[in-house]
Image (cartoon, rainbow, N blue to C red):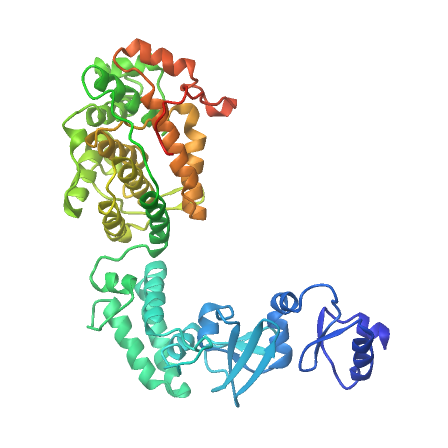
Length: 496
């Protein structure tokens, strides 16, 4: 019998055949009880950890035939207080370390519910939506239903990720099973919510993303979390100002040249500096690379215009107009990239998939509302730069557009522009990815602050002298050569 017990998994049920030996081992301290007839051979780890990693096999052993239902079926995890909800012929409750299994009286499996973990069933998504529209009694423990507002948000996610056909299919499936579940009233609510999202019916929606769909301007809610983290970090910080020392000709035009040069180089429009100088100042377009040359020249026409770089949007419509107009200038020679028009299909960089075309305007509007609430030029510049880069509203030219918008805020606010030298590309791109993927804005803010500090140290009044400074500090080096940008001596300003 000992050998039989030893061969059992980490967590097991005591049966008639093993109960005597299990009890003896528990008394001897080589097995311990976790719940009713539930034991573990693990005498080292905390009981909560053992239950957590074996949760679904445990539920399958203790509640065979039950349906994983209500909020658990929708969230696919235990509620914040550790509750797991299931439906079966009678109610019962089993408390385990860190988890409470709450079986409510309800229907067994119906059409669409799937077998799960051998002896359980998992409620279909239509059933889960219907059950989560049920009212929940007020109590300290987590309610069995997530409530209407969360259902609205999740329906908006279905529409955003899978489209109208998927939402209509969900409604049809819910219609078929609602009578069997006794949830006709909940189906009427669900039907009204879906109709409101699709614009075919009127309903009082409360979830922001659902209301945006009903208003005809949906947005990407996942991006809002990223924007909010950056906004909070920028708004709570203290920022010293680096006054613009290149605000008058010829320094302004020389700084603008390097701005346009590096902004294009980082995106792949690579020219030797002397060739770029001829493109910008002599409009000498190399016949073998006319489009790349026009990208550099178009960018310079924006960042080299004192009037243009002091134009800031007063409202959202003007913001959209500025984006389209400036993009049209940069991408003028690339008609296939739809200059001045928002993208018609989604784009990505590596594994990062940007905002869907249908969500571009709505997502920009949500971010613009945060941008308007920022006061200092530096923080406004960083926020608008990231907003445009993260949404990626155009087929191409988004990085250049983001940096143009950033430097317009800085120059209009009397601060030094930010330029990303070629050798600093990895730090710049890495900080953007960290903010997007990990919601961590610290590296992005630090990298941009260092870039501004570097630019602020350059004397742009003489083009040759500025070029030599950049060369001496490795600005033109390829980051693949494992060479770093050498920073000038501390200028005494910046982030405290």
